[in-house]
Amino acid sequence: MTRLISKGPGVASSAQSPVVMIVDDDAAIRASLDSLFRSIGLETRLFSSPSELLGGTLPDGPACIVLDIRLPGVSGLDLQGQLTRQGIDFPIVFMTGHGDIPMSVRAMKAGAVDFLSKPFRDQDMLDAVTLALERDTQRRTQSAALDDLRAQYETLTSREREVMGYVTAGLMNKQVAGLMELSEITVKIHRGNVMRKMGVRSLADLVRKAEALGVSQTRGNTEQT
Amino acid sequence: MTRLISKGPGVASSAQSPVVMIVDDDAAIRASLDSLFRSIGLETRLFSSPSELLGGTLPDGPACIVLDIRLPGVSGLDLQGQLTRQGIDFPIVFMTGHGDIPMSVRAMKAGAVDFLSKPFRDQDMLDAVTLALERDTQRRTQSAALDDLRAQYETLTSREREVMGYVTAGLMNKQVAGLMELSEITVKIHRGNVMRKMGVRSLADLVRKAEALGVSQTRGNTEQT
DNA sequence: GGCCGCTTCATACCTAGGTATGATCGCTTC
DNA sequence: GAAGCGATCATACCTAGGTATGAAGCGGCC
Image 1: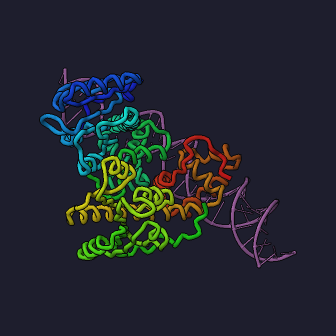
Image 2 (image 1 turned 120 degrees about the horizontal axis):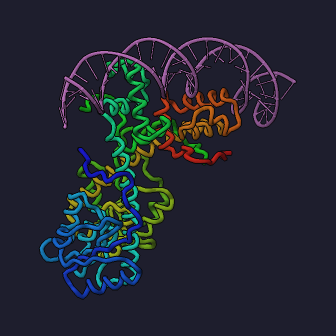
């Protein structure tokens, strides 16, 4: 639960150029995709197998994966599952020469951006990758905002968090004091600290942040260690 | 924008039995699916073409559509698009005997629950339909809650809505009075009316309702006729 | 041991929010 | 034209929220 690697607020998402990770065991296809993506100014990274991708360091900026379904060792679908389990969720564009419908359906259900049959038109691939990169950019923006929010929340002491939960649930200071067995004055102090630490000047904003964090105490749940 | 058919709060979603709408031009398949779904206690409605479905009245309770891609007149994918455009979005399970990957991908991108190739196993169809009905039930619940919320919001006068927007944005009565060129007393009256009509007893709850309605005045936008 | 941070609380004072009473004005409806 | 509703505002009073000052106990850390 502790977030040691907080990297400070709004960390360097400073307009890094988008990266396309290409995973295919066929060197000719890798080369061809490489030049296709470079032709529209995208950065690329080439991998001949899923393990090669998992072994290296992943891009910091917006990125997506172009993945052949049929690969040595792990299949593309397996890699998709593996990445999801590891909490890595770059958008994936699948391609295949020997795919079938169940395969494509499974991939799409698991959140793939597109599923292209070889041979595909260059433009279709470019469209898919463009969409994938847009999605990743959006995902990164939201995720960064949430990280900042969590970083603020973690500066709160446990008592302050409790108070925040009750206050954003709509309870009056007096009621919070009753539930926590405190004097109203102490609740006010905690509340003031919460407002300051969370960087808000109105209860409305605090409620919105609490909603985003999922920490409103709609009912019960006093235990927050 | 006026919602004449409001049907009162939390309208009769009173445990209506789920309905499966089957659209296929092959009578044998219709009959076979009919008995499959009835065997697990689901209600069915049979249609031999998309137009037949569009012509009739749609179910009130939770429902989904099982749809053949290849149909006389409109194709299954066309029907999917047509329904979406009409704001009807029952979950759809596609089935096909002559489908291809692009078709399945297009269907899944458009939100289909599943895409089964004939012949499929009965259990796969039942699983897909079960999931589809669960999704529809959830969608209906959320949609009903939002309808109730909107119904409450529509009992507000335009001034009250303005005040609600500013108050949920975190402005103080004094500031709202300044922006609206009113005395603080009048703002307080409107604010009190808003709380009563929206059925909340705390600002926190009002903020949450405003968020759900998308009516917070985070910046500007005084014009609300 | 001494310092620091968390927690607790009191007193005091000020601002903000909520409601009741009563009144005026304008528009619409019957 | 009377009744009704929305909107406006005043006065008055009460509750709720916010902050400053000061103080005390407790646990951890150097």
